[in-house]
Image 1 (cartoon, rainbow, N blue to C red):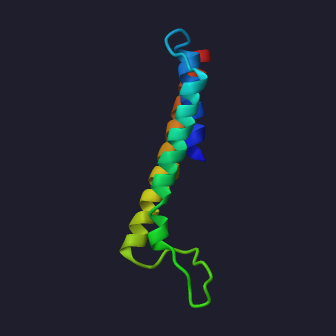
Image 2 (cartoon, one colour):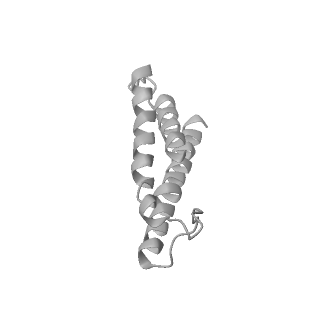
Image 3 (tube, helix red, strand yellow):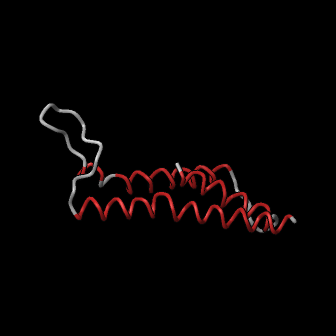
Length: 100
C-alpha cells in the first residue's frame, strides 16, 4: 500500500528534520497505519460498482468502456499512485538535503 509507505515517509521526515518537536508514540503510529488502511479501503470501494462478472460468473478485471470507468481510472491513478509517489519523493528529497 502506498499510503502505508507515505505514513512511514512522513514519520521519517519529521523524525529527522524536526527531532525534538515531533514524537511518534506507538499509539500514534498505529493510528497513522489504521488511517492509511481505512482511506485506501474507502478509496477502492467504488470498484465494486464498476467491476462485474460475465455470463459464466467469472470476474471482469477490466473497467467498462464508459466515461464513468475512465474517470474512475484516472482519479484512481492520480490519488492512488501518482500524488502519493510524488509526495514520497519530495519528502525524501528534503530529508537528503537536510542530512547533506
